[in-house]
Image (cartoon, rainbow, N blue to C red; front, side, top):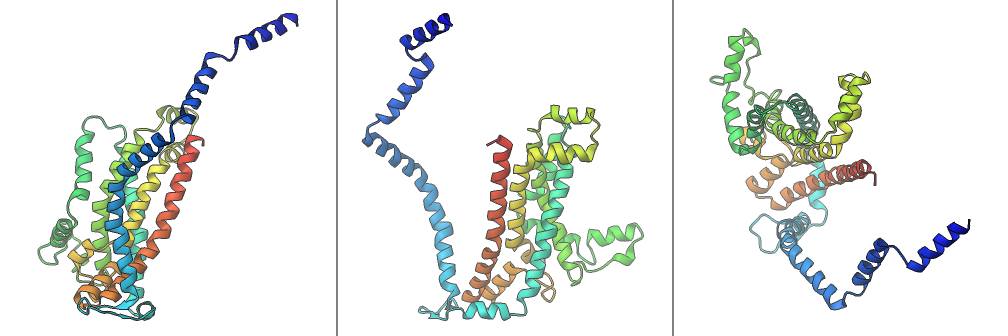
Length: 331
């Protein structure tokens, strides 16, 4: 007992340990930093962020402000002093018979166009997970459709779907399925799904490459241990692999989901929204109203509604991704 008291007294006499002294010195340095120096550091930070903020202002906030303004006036692209009409554009939009078929097509595109690339991309990533040097060739082949311009993809697939000379109908003839021949892009029953299949083909490669990169960081020891414990393939995927790549999986889901709301280019190239509006979505409807009928305000209103519908989903998925990431780090 006497020895313990003596040791404690000796430690107190010697003062704090070197690590504690170092922490105190670093804290004192931060607290003693001149106010002018801190202001200079703040100005430097603002200067570094300024280019990004200017780009956000020019390419997001200013167009968004213009869209909100045009949604409440009657502007045809020519009249210099558009008349304020209040909610008239919104009232007309929700009474427009073309709105609901376009919304239905958007919903189909969002559901199938999000789930299918995720499933296909994940399946391909799992298949290529342990492939060696030859896997580079496969990654390039699968990713290539995504980096190609959507216009080029649409033109090529329009040739494939051609009812007379298209490869798809010729392939059906070759395997004895001639009764399935149809004008894929000219038939209202098949046009939307034909274009959607093209988009899935082009998007799955992106999902594949991103998820394959995420799989490289999966703890293989956990996977091997679960296999030794008797877990089957589905159990290993659901309980071991997916939780480790979930932040990346949610990020890819957000990108494909928002793309389903804003889809335009590939539909415009392949069908232009036809036949008879069978492939119209909010994007093509907004384009036709704004630039073909010169109803800039009405087309802008459609685009604004499209943005308002997409933002809550993107925010929710972003928060979910952040929560999953924090859980993964134990924060």
